Structures are given as C-alpha cells and as structure tokens.
Image (cartoon, rainbow, N blue to C red):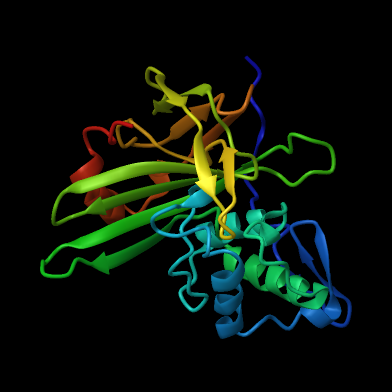
Length: 268
C-alpha cells in the first residue's frame, strides 16, 4: 500500500515571517504588508470567542477542538495550527455570524500563523488539579501530509496525550483538519507493532446559529499503548500514513504521561 509522504517541515519553512515593507508569507498565503502588525492578543481572543468558540466549546468540541478558553497570551502552537487550518478552510463563518472585514481577516490569520510556529515540536502544559497535589499533563504535536487536492492546503493531524497524575486517568486523542471523516476504519500502530483497528461513526453537530448539520468526525480517542518511539496512523484517509515522534518527548514528560498511558489508551 502506498503511503503518503510526510512533510516534516510543518509551519517551519512556510511559517509566518515578517518581510519588511513587503508582506508576510503564511504557509503559502501572502498577507498584505499592513497586516504584518499582528493583532493585539485581546483582539485575537475576542475574534476567537465571537466566531469560533460559539461552536468549539468544551461540551460540543465541534471539529475536535475546544476554543472556549483560548488565550493568545498562552501560546499553544499545536492548537493554533489547527485553528489556522479551520480559518483558512471556510470555518470562519460556519457559526452563521458573518465574517470580519478583509483587513481583520488578514491580520487574524497572520497572528494565528505566528501563534502556530513550532507546532511540529511537542508542546507540554501542566495544570494543577484543584484540591489535590496532582497535575494534568498534556503534550501535543502536529504533523502535515501531502495535499489531497491540487492547490489545496496540506492536511493537518494533531496528537494530544494527557494524564491526570492524581486520578491516573488519561487519553490519547487524534484530531485532524480540514476534512471531517466518517464510516471509516483506520489503524493505529505503536513502535511498528501489530495494527489496532479503529472505526469512526458519524454524529450530528450544531453550529452556533442553531442549525443542525450532519457531519463526520474530526477527532477520536485512540486505544493504543504509549509508544517508546513512534505512533503511526494509517488509512484514516485512503493511502495516507502519518507518524508521530513520541520518542522525542522529554524523558520527564514521557514518564509523567506514562503514569496514565503506559498500558493502553482508553477504549472508544
């Protein structure tokens, strides 16, 4: 079976960079020079809350994302990369609330590209668990693959590992953008071992304007052990394989995640 070549330079060579008096290049997208002055963080947060968080809540997690607590002051490159993919693939007006003016769109995208820089490397966060001595450890990373269509953006996959060191509950979550998927069987393999089949079933999502839409999924919990080196996802989309470098995690971070994930991830 043919495997899709993985682009390991995600948001690196094509990441948003300021070009004096000319433009900003954002993942192949040219942003006018006047948008190079990135939006204030407060305005970024306001835009996300108005146009995105209305659908991407903690409860709904439409598209596999929660943006309810998005804060541009706390940079999370992997999350920003997924947000960027949504913004650039028609999700900006999905809530039925219109879209910002073109200058604001350009500046918002430029700011989000800057937030997403470094998404190909692991981002690890720690949040204290109220009333306990434990923490929630979360590690996330993004990979992109060859575009599925001519002149289209490279699709993104995000892997997120979490562990509550107090309750010892954790999960391995895969999200992807821009295309939802449903009624698809794909496989997961840790360190080249036997492939573990997973099956996606569609669900109904509601947009911010209350419209009911039947869509596929853009996220799934994986049932797999925490790998020593790599986690491979195969055939979520036909003939497409993506590899996540779990072995690149800091040993301390991996050891803490292993408190919850050493045996196997949660069943779907």
